[in-house]
Image (cartoon, rainbow, N blue to C red; front, side, top):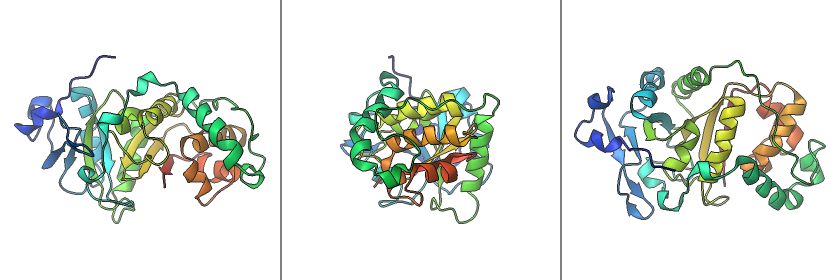
Length: 275
C-alpha cells in the first residue's frame, strides 16, 4: 500500500496552515515517540483547550489536506500531551493489511474460554467458537454530524477528558487515527494498534463510527447507527469483548447481556479503556 503524503511538515513554516486551506489556532507538531524523534510529525495539536464548535471548524481539513480531527485528552494513567504517551509508529503496521473478523475471532478464541465465566456470559452468547460479526446498523445516518455533536459535548465545561485539545492526524480514514500515530493505549493487550484500527474500520462501515477522542489509555468513538435490538446488541457485545476485554471485565456491567443493554443499544457513544 502506497504511503499517503504527510502534509504536516508544511505547518513548520506555515503554522496557520493557509497553504493547506486551513486557519489553525496556535499549536505544535508532535514527533516524539518511545524511540525518540520520528522522521516526520505524527500529529498537530492545538495549544489551548478545545471549545464547542472547534471540531466542526476543522472537519474540512479531512477533504482539503487529508487530516482527520481528534480530541486529545489529558485524563488517564499517564495523562499529559501526546509527546508523553510513548507513541510507537515504528511498531505499528497498516490497518488495511488486517481483516477485522480474523482479529476479533483470534482474540475471542484465545480469551473467551478462560476469561468468560458463566456469570459473565450471562446467556448473552455461547462461550464457544467465534459466532461471527454482528449485523450492521441502519444505513440512514450522518457519521460526521454525530461525531461533531459528541465533540461539542466532550468540550463543554469540565470535561472528563481533562482539558481536551483538538488535533489533526494524517490518515486515510478516521478509524486509522490510532494506527497513524502509533498509539500505545492498548499496549498491555495488543502491541500492534493497527489490528484494532482494522476493527474500527469495520465498525465505521457497519455502524457509522468515528474516532473522536484519545487519552493515554482511552478511546472514544461516536456511533451514528448503533444496534437497536437486544439480539443485535448482544452479538456486538462479543466484538466489544474481543476488542477490549477490560472494558467489560473491569467495567460497571461485567456480563455481556448487561453490557449490551446499557452500553450498546441506541448508544451514540462507545468508550474503551485498557488496563
